[in-house]
Length: 424
Image (cartoon, rainbow, N blue to C red):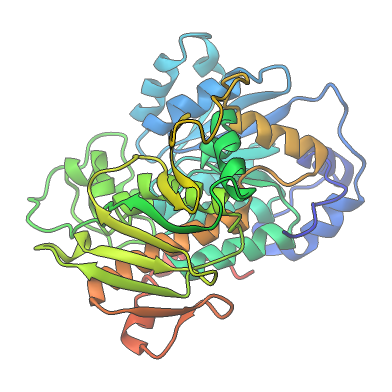
């Protein structure tokens, strides 16, 4: 794990100190300016922006509202402006909260015009990394939903940006902050099952092509070009807008969504925060290649099998020398049942709170950027394995598939020039 960021004051304090707004073009100067500035007042609330006001944002803004003593949401960006009204109406604990939000369609404009300390990025997958890299260069700390990346190279670029600019980034794999999951994962990690040789994970599929959709009129208040972001500018259709997670123009599919939670629990339980599989192998066939079964082979000999539609939705079944343990969201089950005592602590999950804690303390959050990048990378490799139908030998150090140029070509996604990644 990399060292914790140090000397981490508020961005607003920096701007007041230097008396100017630092642009992205001058971001190479920003880190030294930030870390030379004095710390913010203890009574100074963190000013938080939000990018992406869809369904996930409802949970995130509720979580943030529970931290109102130290953070406040001041600006919201969504390329479909009416969605911000929907989000504001959901905030039942404070119906007037939405009245104070500044509203944007362009997150770069929000970064330039708002005096933010941090940002929550709850966009579709293909938008997330570019917004996060720009936020880091602006001196903002980031909460980024999962999957962290849309491709492996852009995920690596984000890791570099977070470390270069010394930011706190929390990935939205919130089970890492759930007490019950921490308890059961620690049991596995500390050898409670003995040697674990097999882990069963639900076989979540990939996404599909955006074909057969008739062009529809772009609704009022929608900047469809910005929604498509790095992807090809497709004709508008409500399914692409509302059910974007089904289409590979915008996502890697369920394996990158719920599958990211499941794989993350596997890695947390096994202590694999910096360990990748060395081989990814297709094992079962399917009419749709994106649903092939896959096995992951890890350096210690453990095999992770994604070959069944059954199983825990947000975890896995760990099979070891001493028995089996099923870990799911907020619960676990043992065979034999006496293997692990029931969890007796307080049921809690405060992932957003952990992010704010770490902004204040400069410690690493529960789901740091390297872990999010690793888990997203594995999901992407599973999709590539399925599409090629070939075994992939993975060089985790170089982040390259060994001896397969065609498969390596699938690591990257073609970006539109207007949405190229900033150079880190």
